[in-house]
Length: 229
Ligand SMILES: NC(=O)c1ccc[n+]([C@@H]2O[C@H](COP(=O)([O-])OP(=O)(O)OC[C@H]3O[C@@H](n4cnc5c(N)ncnc54)[C@H](OP(=O)(O)O)[C@@H]3O)[C@@H](O)[C@H]2O)c1
Image 1 (cartoon, rainbow, N blue to C red):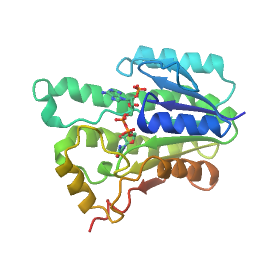
Image 2: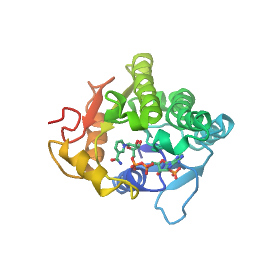
Image 3: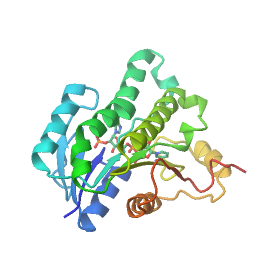
Image 4: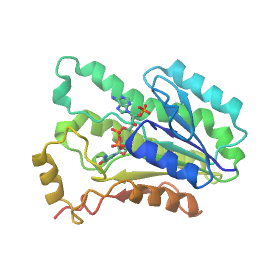
């Protein structure tokens, strides 16, 4: 049975990927801030902000699994810089922890399990904003760019046994706090002007896993938003 570890599985894309891969026959383990017994896959609870908690979760995975076929870095914190004017340093630290420290430590710790699979895959879920930042989200964008860069180092270091790629989503699903003006503005800049949902990202993960000659690729799945009109 193939195994997958996905971070941030409580809701939205992470929950969807974990459910779909479970249905496809994977043994999925979600790494999450809070376990949800109603979800149809096993979970390990951790605090993304604390490196000792991340290392403890990695140690549990090493005890539970003989090999790992797929590792997806999905957990994310998407908030405007303006929301954190009181303590920007704490906000930046939190972004660094979830977008860079967590993936870097997991890649390092779980590498032997990925190598044991004989054809391990790591997918970093980044953002089109990693290449073309939105200044209202400058701190978020800079740590997603860090996640993108980590992908490239890992692709070089882990080849050929483990392939490492990223997916840069565009507008797949707005957050409830997005205003209708913000939504309209994004749609106006998107060639395929629709909120795509999560299936295109699953298709991207499948493509990266299934294609043995792809590593170090940043795959935009964005309806052409990065190109713009
Ligand atoms: N939605 C979009 O249109 C869009 C566009 C571009 C890029 N992306 C990227 O695609 C991925 C999935 O998007 P999404 O919209 O499904 O993400 P999301 O719901 O905002 O967050 C993904 C996961 O991160 C964890 N999380 C949420 N808030 C957090 C916080 N404040 N601190 C730490 N962890 C937090 C949650 O996992 P747990 O509760 O299980 O820990 C959540 O399930 C993300 O990496 C995102 O950056 C999404």
